[in-house]
Length: 103
Image (cartoon, rainbow, N blue to C red; front, side, top):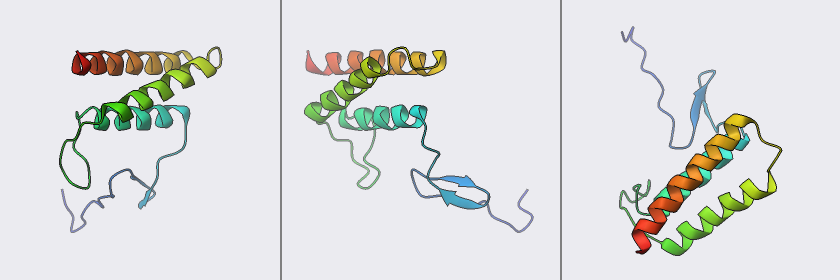
């Protein structure tokens, strides 16, 4: 129900908190999700938010996947089970997508 009020829409990348559009809290999870989104964008899986076009840049996709791998390596033993699982699953998914595109 509207009650005369419209829900405020935030720009891409921001969330509504206490009635204001703000950037999400910086956490390990948001960092990993952001890098995953970048990799998917470079793999041509997502539309560029500015142009609406899907573009593929496999070199940038590989660089982002390598960055996630480095994070996995450097944070080994310091992540929660959920963080470790999230990072591992994302890396597996991104690697499989990359391999399919480079065959």
